[in-house]
Length: 453
Image 1 (spheres, one colour):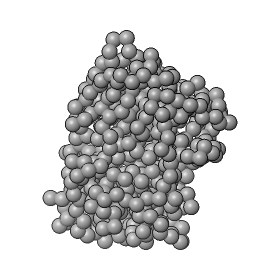
Image 2 (cartoon, rainbow, N blue to C red):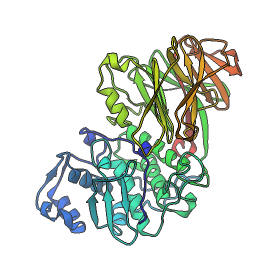
Image 3 (cartoon, rainbow, N blue to C red):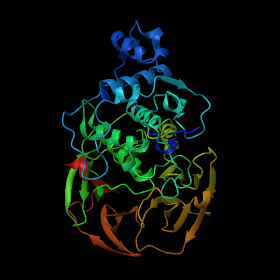
Image 4 (cartoon, rainbow, N blue to C red):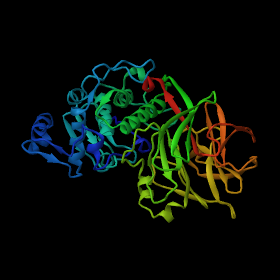
């Protein structure tokens, strides 16, 4: 049996019942005419062929709305290929026709292993879908990408076990190279096409698709995917404005956000935890793309259901490819195995209160450790090396009480009292900008030539 496995860490959660406002390809009701057409391709829906079918949050609805997304989403007449390997246009013509040419049955399986959202047997024409993909915590856009991914397996493209990178050691989580045109190449292509050329889709959803395309390109191939990119330091000021600081020290004003807060990276995605704990954590976009009502993960759904007092106990969050760490004021909760729900708590030493995670060596999802700074300036290394949770003190002392430290465009930046500093080892020098005294948050952000042209 050959299965297509998507890691739960990449199973980005979804559009809620406001989905019609995000994607015109996923309405709240499917017309009788459309139902008749779909039933002609998928006999399992024959009993629904003569009536309109509306959103009842059932598994049937989520399957149908995803098929409708493929049927109705329109793209620009001209879709030039990228100069790198993000988009070749090989699968750009008609997703729905491609899918029904390979899959004619959709079966829901209730006992899927953790992390698996769909799979096929390469000798059949049935796609098996797991419950995790059939709720409002997964979008029609994501499911359409999964459907295209699974259909490609029918053409004879299995996965391999990753031997390096963010998914090292995970069976069926990689392809050899994107130029082979396998299932993960299809995943990258569908997200890239949606981000660059889709029409009638909310700008924030297109920004989400862009980040998803790059995450898969970066993590799902043994041979590195060529992507023309650069990196800036994304700066958020107390006026709710985003700015980009490039390697030359130039500042460019971008868009606005609706609230101040701490920004956590999840691969290419940015998640904001608002300072106002009455507000919810959510994806954030820097170029006035707006907001989407997706929850970035089950943990963040749980966080958003908490009281403001409970939320205030969370200090920071690290999201790696195969591990995560929830940093609370006096303890850290580790999840070290992506295939297990087991978590482990490690208490901070007596008298130590966590302040923030810092990344002097840069944030990377394939790294198994990060650094923590306490309110008194002590540094600790935390991580899940060999799937074992650990926390240990670092003898190094910083020269200032930094609230953030990030590496971007080859330089290490620290944030203190609204001002930027450039760090070299444990010493720092001021980075004088027009934003001095107003900077509330910093985080690295990459820019991609194909999407910015």
